[in-house]
Length: 168
Ligand code: 5GP
Image (tube, rainbow, N blue to C red; front, side, top):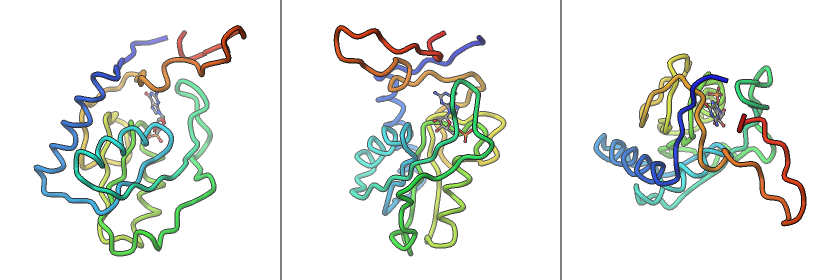
């Protein structure tokens, strides 16, 4: 496989503070951070604390089935948040990476009708992304190993570990 961009938990801590600083310097004060599960949950938690925003929502989107292998289109999984909750709110969508950008586009389009304003923040944005995020920490075109998904799930001690394709 090709080159990888490796992010550690320690680097993530720096990244999320720097990303929040960029957002604060830009004068954007979101009423709600909308995280895209699962990777965006880490980013949303860090940003919400750093931006002193007490309201976090979550949407589950399924797209990737492996390294670089996707479903045809991303889909929102139930329970889909009630768009009424975002009426007249300034929303900050948080995700780990905009790769094709299809996931972010799906969630942004879902918000667009209802909200006062929607902006997006990601740790990484790739060149091909069809959504250009307002706030980006780093740009790369490599596959990124995030600290929360680089290891296989834990198994009860004594059982054989699950085979992890991503570690190859
Ligand atoms: P997109 O819809 O922008 O192609 O992909 C969005 C989601 O796919 C991300 O939130 C992430 O979960 C997954 N993804 C896309 N590219 C990468 C990558 O380089 N590394 C990892 N670990 N996940 C990725």
